[in-house]
Amino acid sequence: MNYKTYYITGSSGFSDEVAFALKRTNNNEINVIFIESNLNLINTISNSGMKILSEEILKDIKHPNVLITVSDPLIRKKIVEKYAKFNTGIVYPNFLDSSLIFDVKSLKMGVGNIILHNTIITSNVILGNFNILNSYSGIGHDSKIGSFNTFNPRVAISGNVCIGDSNNFGMNSGILQNKNILDNNNIWINTIVTKSYKSDNTLFGVPSKKILK
Image (cartoon, rainbow, N blue to C red; front, side, top):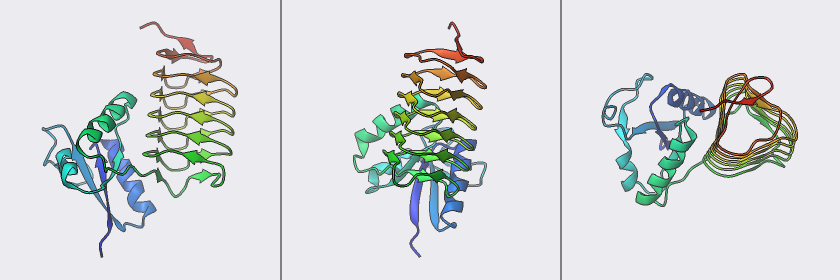
């Protein structure tokens, strides 16, 4: 039987998590291949027992299905830009864990998103490209999420929230309803954003406060 093949960029523990969820959701009827740019990791074995290959193999594959499991938003964006230079036919599917609860009729979503187990996305949500929603996260109604954001486990986004690009939300963090946050913000663990922010902030606390760099 010719199973569909997915190429996972990265070989970290999170890559293993995504591979596990991908296989479980597809009843193990898929092939998963880890690919890396790190020369020290190529041809070694991942923690899950899989051989790691060079990302260079993508150059010779027609329309490969690629999932980028690098958590850092800015690095994830650079990988997409790099891949576009040597294979314009790469397919970036959305991976939705089978346990995801979402409004099928109203959710609008781009490409390359990874949404793991027990996540909830309610009504009229717009989700851009290459976002990672880790386990037990939630997005409330009428929220708009940009691209390349990372939501670590148990992040809670309330209703009518607008989020830009390349933000990193720590575990157990969240945003109150009707607040906006722009780009490249780092929201630390257990932080609750209680007002709107522009770009390039590091936030911590309840209520959130800017941390000077």
